[in-house]
Each structure stands twice: as structure tokens, then as C-alpha cells.
Length: 188
Ligand code: GLN
Image (cartoon, rainbow, N blue to C red; front, top):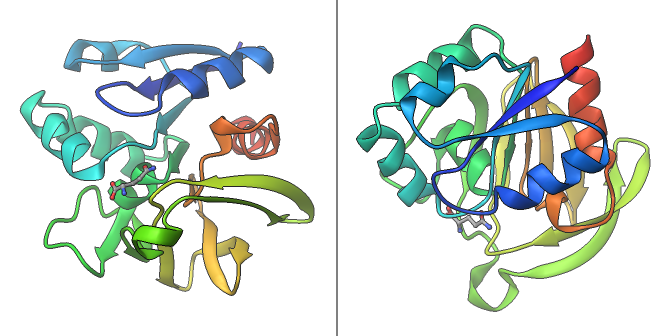
């Protein structure tokens, strides 16, 4: 059975667990360093506040271990703040985090008014609902990064090898498409 660890120090982690339960996937919460000893087939970095999550990852001494797991090929899905944690480059932030995904991300990229909105757009070849909450978007990608979705010409979903990231919150809609895509990455 597939088991996925969900970073649960802050943010929207419960919603990922609920959606994955619907798909028959076992999950557990990663709250402290010892939780990383459990066997996992994939890892989710949820939405929330990237600065807070980044700080907690260091305070709880989990940062280096998680980075190593991603570098070694553990499949990871980062949503919203999770995408920010993966990016090599942040356009409007002094801090960067794991830097494992070759993307440049702009935080709070839609401004105060448009920061949160709902739309439908293509993810690969399927149209899905997308919920954006004070969302980032991807300003540019490296050559090994595949663009999976754009909204109004802005990149909002990307994949690089074992890493998948979305600027929107796939766990906050009824659609399971993004999580099923992630499960396929795990099974390969
Ligand atoms: N604005 C948040 C950040 O910069 C991300 C928002 C979210 O995850 N919904 O970390």
C-alpha cells in the first residue's frame, strides 16, 4: 500500500490527508524529526506560510533530512507555500529553502486584491478546478522542468523528475486529478 508523509508543522495539511484517504492512500503527519523515520513512498509540502514553515523546519531540525530525501529522489508534491519551499529562486524574498526545483517563483504574485481566486484551467490534458490563496506563480523554469498548467499565461503547475508543484490548492477542491498524477509518479 502506498504511504505518503505530509508535512504538518503549519498550514493546510489535513485537507491533503482527507483527499488521499478518498483515493485509498495511507498518510501520516510529519510533525517532528522522528516522524521522518517512518517509511514513505511520497512527501507532501502543503500550503500555508512559507516563511513560517521554513523557520519551523530549521527549529525542529528537519530541514536537512527532508532536503536529502528529495535530492535522493523521494517523490514530492509541493502546493502553494510548498512550491515556494522547493524553488531554487524567489524573486521577491531574501530567503530560499530547499532549492531542489529549478524554478523562479514570485510570492504573493497576484497582489492583494487578486491574491485569492477560483478558476478552471487545463492540467496536462484535463480541465480541473483551481483554488488560489495569496498564491505565488512561476516566473521562469529551467530546461528540465515541464510546465503542466498555466492560467492567464502564468505558469501554475510544474514537474521536474520526482518533484511536482502547484501554485494553487488541489486539496481544496473535489477534483483528485493532481493527487492521482502524483500517485502515478510514485508508482513509476
Ligand atoms: N503567501 C503564502 C507564502 O508566501 C503562500 C500562500 C498559500 O500557501 N496559500 O508562503
